[in-house]
Image (cartoon, rainbow, N blue to C red; front, side, top):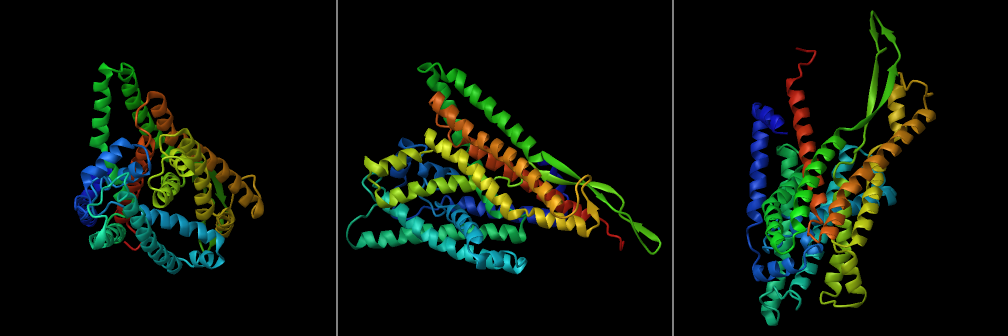
Length: 434
């Protein structure tokens, strides 16, 4: 990663893109320090510390601590991610959206516009839900709760949260257009990286508690070793691929011979990257948001049961998380990769897979390979995600979101490195006209 950045820095065009991306990320972090009026951050931080592992803790993690400080970018990219999930699900269910998605670049622009409008609605709804939660007696973080001042403060808080969420999305799109790409992912990456000092401080606190709880002297080093092993395994998994051999037939055009070479079609084990993790985490955050909106002071009954089940420290959350990661992995692969189209492309180029007849047998063979690699990648991704939850429950340590954070950070870093390498290859390539 660092070598790729150093090489990209030597190219003037990429250097400008890197500087522009860095500027946008700095602006995002500055926005995470601008407080929203009429909120008491100290009260909010106190409640977050006492209820670690819930929905708000997850939101605070993704925003790099912006929510705990009650700042402008407190919602971060959460509404956009939720809107993207909803629109992708509807693309499969609604024929009009499915046709739009297959229209090429123009269709993708329309899908993005629909996603953007959906983000606005979800941002307003989510902002109002959090305002309702924060003004409840459980948090009591809103300074004015009665009279005209309550109306004014409520409107200001909801508008500030909503506008901040849309501004984050706009900044991410600027990175896509004028920066190095992966705008939303990089903003998510920056937010999680900003929490690393807090996580280190937490581990140091556990070591200090070892004087009273000697088991922490064993568990803390084990957690550190586990995280290092997870990083190495994620890097290995991202580079793993199943290579399908392809043989192209010879053909003569004029005096030149084309084709005849043997190559392969790579099928990556982790074709979906970090998206299933983000989708599953966001999807599991929705029930907690609804409970906070409907019954923020729940101390028992069904609402309290839902809050406990969807707490990121619970075993039920780990089970649902495991299942959803696998399902979202299959869903994303089914949308992005079409075995029939891949088989047709091979046949159009006079190619064939050795031992497999062209047409439907080829598409069925590719489909089986994709299914096996998808299952392998999904299981590895899910195990990495839930392992810290299980270890945290056994060791009585709050590291439930550690696996998710590592997967997102490492995945985004590798995707960004690959994007930079591809851009450098394009600039170093000397075409046949030269």
